[in-house]
Length: 346
Image 1 (tube, rainbow, N blue to C red):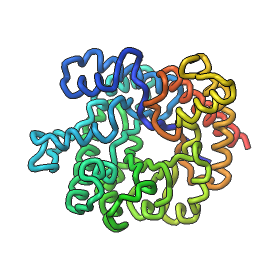
Image 2 (cartoon, helix red, strand yellow):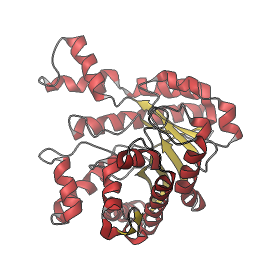
Image 3 (spheres, helix red, strand yellow):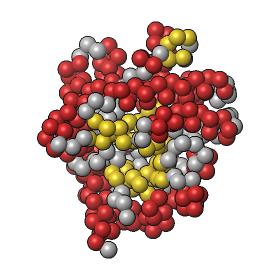
Image 4 (cartoon, rainbow, N blue to C red):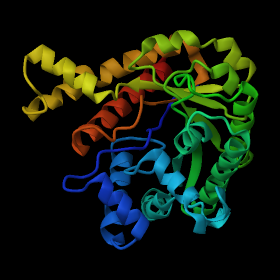
């Protein structure tokens, strides 16, 4: 069997003393590049060090706002929302290129990277709300394609292995008024270029409820949150995935930090937000490498070689601190590595 590859979802807590608001301002104003670049490069290197095989650029900004703010700025566009391709840049990719260059120098290998971009549906809902303007939806999908094209141009010292669309609303939000045909069209526009470049095209959803619709697009990887909601696995028909040559990226470590802390609080009758030493119980008792590996084993028993990637359920932006977040990533890496080693020896 092909080994299952460890990717991460991107977002992290900011370092102590740094806020997400500061990162947003620094990225937009470009007046504190030295500190900003250092924060992003250090976090990216730590992802590599704890064992993420295909790391996502560190996200310290709002996923949708990071892209929509650029699109809504008139000076970046030919006309409202019609983005100029040269302005569709992801600053973080330019920043991590230096880390990738050093990685290549030290290992002799090209680093493979995952690039996450807000999907057209999530972006549309934030920009326009529930009313369905199909033309605007299509324009946002074209804008996303421009970000993807610029990402490939930026990748000088690394290889883009995965482009991921973050589409949390699909399968969850009943306010989506677009027809299935409209959604398929938008996802196709947003995903075709990446597939033409040979990259895997992933869509990250909480729930795979609409996976059959996704299987009708060029998207070839469906990432969903299995660890926190095991019943999501029951929604998938392996034959449908096989017939459409679609793979999955399965979430095998929980990231719902508030629920995890509640479990610790209840078990030890404390308030872990105040008695912070108890936070460690999350990664020493609840989300251990063995528990994570067992989740992957269960998913594999049902989906088999349709599983191409494994990862935490979602991003880690709202975890209490970076050390705890990186420990979860490290535990996930160990669980996946143990799983792959055991499968190889069978």
